[in-house]
Image 1: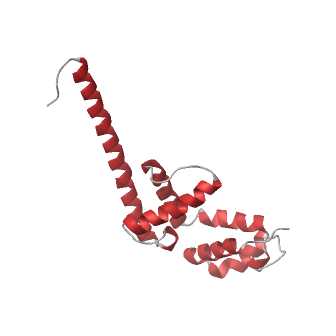
Image 2: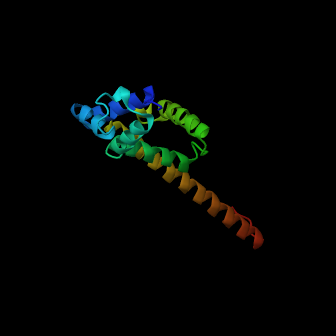
Image 3: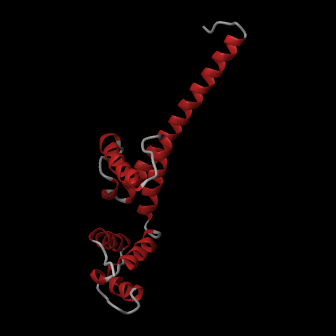
Length: 154
């Protein structure tokens, strides 16, 4: 059996603390392991993954981080879909945020209020990118139309 990894263990504890339910840890571990253990260090890889996925659904920080990643894709800041791309994108997004973000921290270090600021910033970036693209498209169409009509643009 493949046991829980150190990153999974850390993530599990962070989620429990963020949700304020660290006192329920032993009960959760006991339940997911079908009574085999109360120690999170003795969980299987799959048991840990299930717990983390379930807890992540309740963590508003995880949801906000997911939305920020989606907006970063839309803005063209990050791209690609392979596992390697995702790792690179995480580093690239964190570097972008540390350099140009409304909050100069890695995403995983931010609280919900800070994540909300970055979320609003990325919504604005996407909106401005779309407006810029629309303007360039409109300018190009007008230029082509004027050329077709043999008129010079001022």
